[in-house]
Image (tube, rainbow, N blue to C red; front, side):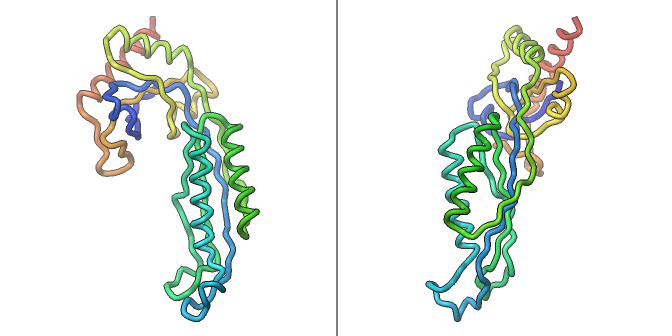
Length: 218
């Protein structure tokens, strides 16, 4: 049984005390290289430029549209870009980035990346290679039911939810019963000096964890 801050805003926004996690999102990443042609920024006319960064911007907007079209809980992110040659007076000749999709349905995640790849290849000069692929995990129904029972018995407000972030519970889910409890955190901020959880929420989470372990011990 793992107790953790949510790292998101759902509990805080809903005024909910506890999140009972039923599944942990899978991850699919692609390494993408967008090819253009480096050139002097002052001498190459706008109609003559083959700007890899402009192409990348169009590709990322289409990726965002595709993910949103497939709906929640799917999320897509590109958080890292490498622009070459990365000089203020040179039209970018190449851009490298890693694209990530997270969700609870691996088949749907494949559809998202396949649609993205089809668009990118059809409209731009790109090289796309698979990076990592990690299937979603369903957590133990036995532990989910136990946590829910404790919340009901103690009058703690709760909701069922997925986790978009990976956790230790995910690593153990393949070999034993594994459960995950969330408490709210301020503005969903984590891995950051501004990360904060109210003492009352920490107490709620600890009591639910304790009650669940005691019930399992019976």
